[in-house]
Length: 114
Image 1 (cartoon, rainbow, N blue to C red):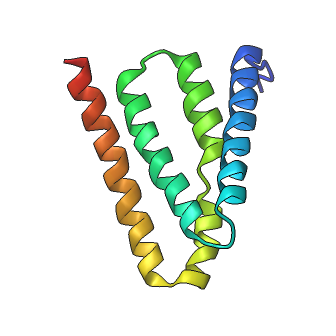
Image 2: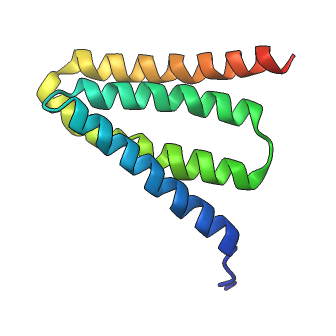
């Protein structure tokens, strides 16, 4: 078993995760008591993931921004819990919204690259 760790990748993911989690927390504090803050975070995060993975080819920036920042920013586990509070409409809005947002981000990045 290979236990060698790419320390640069580990630092990139950890640092990005801190930034993403702090951003998500800030939004939840600014917009408390509603599942829609989580919805906005997940939609915007998926849009940015679509942009990132279309526009950025290098591994370390993808790890920092995608796995780290956007992984720490988006929160589908919280969204799943909030379905119980908000109902199936929230679930549908989350699933459809995130898929459309990722597609839109990718389409925008593709258009800008041309």
